[in-house]
Amino acid sequence: MDSAALNRDGKDMLEYIAKFWDTLRERKPLHNVTPGYLTAPGVLPDRPPDEPEELKDVLADIDKYIMPGMTQWNHPHFFAYFPSSCSYPSIVADMLCSAVACIGFTWNSSPACTELEIVMMNWLGRLIQLPEVFLNTPTGRGGGIIQGTASEATLVALLAARSKKLDQIDPKKEFLGLIDKLVCYTSELAHSSVERASLIAHVKIKQLPTDSSYSVRGEVLQQAINEDRRNGLIPFYMVATIGTTSVCSYDNLKELGEVCAKENLWLHIDAAYAGNSIICPEYRYLIDGVELADSYNFNPHKWMMTNFDCSAMWFKDCHLVANAFNVDPLYLQHKHDNEVIDFRHLQIPLGRRFRSLKLWFGFRLLGVKALQENIRTQIALAKEFEKMVRGDRQYEIIGEVTMGLVCFRLKDTNAMNEALVKEINDVDRRIHLVPGEVDGTYFLRMAIASTKTTVEDVVFGWKVIQECVQNVKNNNIA
Ligand code: PLP
Image 1 (cartoon, rainbow, N blue to C red):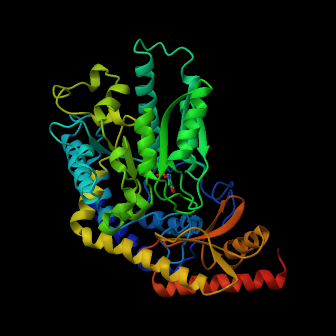
Image 2 (spheres, protein in one colour; image 1 turned 90 degrees about the horizontal axis):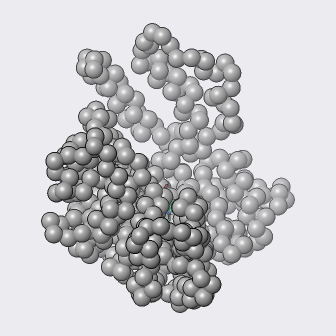
Image 3 (cartoon, helix red, strand yellow; image 1 turned 180 degrees about the horizontal axis):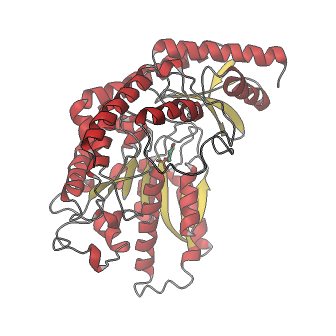
């Protein structure tokens, strides 16, 4: 390691990053490039250089080639998806993570990596008032781990549930013809990663209908289980969502939990986005019923000022999961492996980064109050936007505004609303948002995503939308 070069280039890089953040507002929220803009022949060289270049030349190319191809997720006028959060403590923690360059697959491969993660997951678990049974304690079976994404968490929980169910039915582990009969459940509004997990695990999936509040109820699950059992299927897993991606609705955890307990199904809760709000005590009610779940997950990388990737997952029984996926080659064994759970057993890859540093730095350098304040501010901004929409009779709100997401539409055809989204993103380009669709109704999603977004930005966004509506109507685009 050339530490003099690190000092020199590292300082320049930090300056570049600080300036990037300070001038983010001057950029556009959405890129304006087309496929092949960077891969087309002659844009970048065909091969890597044999001799070293200087950072200033690389940074010049970042400005020339990379920044134009970036969607600026933290631009104050980026209102798309759910947020990708960021803060300076997370950036500097990631620097340290890269610098120590450990791969924490076992306790022994870097004890600090495992043990800080245990402490952070307990801090976070207590902050959201998770029942003690999910926390890592000397005598309990529960525990938390940082996965890369919510999709991985859903898949790991599904595989653990599958393994538990198969072991219960067939302790000899022959599993002949059983996997084809396994069936899992989720909401018709669940994130696509749930369906994907079922495809990867080769199990059937039933996407359950929601009620008028876009919530899956216990009775619906019960009926589906009854019907599937009558047809010789084996129900084993339910994914409930707290904060669906399209409308941020909430499945009924208590009802679903009771059905899962009665019917011996594994209940996993995907609270990827809305789960962050639980760090504010006034939103804790959203996960009432979590005590009935087997696993719970949310993404601090979405809304807790923590950079991607950081997906917090807790199990009620991590020993069960560890045993389900346990392979034990000699080179991974160590003299303490009976005393601690190696995190490699609770995830899909072997290697893992020192992600808990990001949480530790964030907690210590920002403090819980600042993390809570960010969530409360963004919810208040969404409510401001909701007021503007409700104040104009041309529009309607879809669902309920509870977090930083407002779903709304022109009281008009889907085609008109589609034309509006195109006008906003492809023609006007001052703000960026994405659409959603529920029950065949197409709408716009306005998500408060950036820590830089102010009430003036929300007012600006509303003005842009109204101007775009006018353009669509004038041009009769729809
Ligand atoms: N679950 C929900 C409810 C989501 O909204 C999202 C993404 O927005 C995901 C899962 C997927 O998250 P990840 O990218 O961490 O897999």
